[in-house]
Structure formats: structure tokens, C-alpha cells
Amino acid sequence: MVLKVDAPLDLSKPQHDGTVTQAELEDCDGVDGAGTCVALRGRVYDVSAGAAFYGPGKPYHHFVGQDASRAFATGCRAAACVSADLANLTPSELRELDRWMELYETHDKYTFVGTLVEDPVDVALGRGAS
Image (cartoon, rainbow, N blue to C red):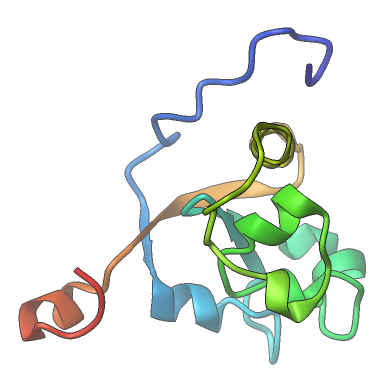
């Protein structure tokens, strides 16, 4: 239950059709005036308003510029846990990840930026994952 609602938010469809490449997400690290973004399940959120938590040198800065789904699901803050890999997570851990996603979706200061996609240039050149 999130926000006193039994049914989870429908996160199967993005709020809009914006996209973010991995390189763009990595550039969104909050350093030198860059925006600060974090991704969960491939959904990218601007958390720049949370600089006290996500800014350089702050406790959650190691989550920014990447998909940190596994860390949010497990509660593990170690750098090794910051990953998009959801393999072998328990139903309880996946629910925890959903709770975090609902927080980002409904937060009044964090905004959905777009969905993480492969770089079209890399795809055209046959580089990276397909």
C-alpha cells in the first residue's frame, strides 16, 4: 500500500514519450551544473530538487546517473548493488522497488524525464546491447 491506496499505480505506460540514452543518463550526475537523475526499471527521474540527498558528496549520490533498481529493491547502498539487474529478487523486494517508483511518480519535486533506451547511433552501428 502506497499513499493509502491498496492498488499500485499503473507504471506500465510512461507519463509521456520522452527517451533517455544510457550516455545521457550518465551525464545527469549532478556534477558541474548537470542535472541529477536516477533510473528505476528503466524509468528516468530528475531528482535535482533533492540535492541534499542526491548531490555530489551526499548519501545517495552513488545512485545518480544510472539505473539503481537493484539497490532500491534490496535496500543495499553498496556500490556493487547499484544495478538494473532484477534477477533473483524476491516478490517482497520487487514490491519495495514498486513503492520507490510510486514515490518518484507522485513526488511533488521529482519529475519523470523519460524511458531509458539504447542509443540509436550505437544501434545503427551495431554496438552495445540489442
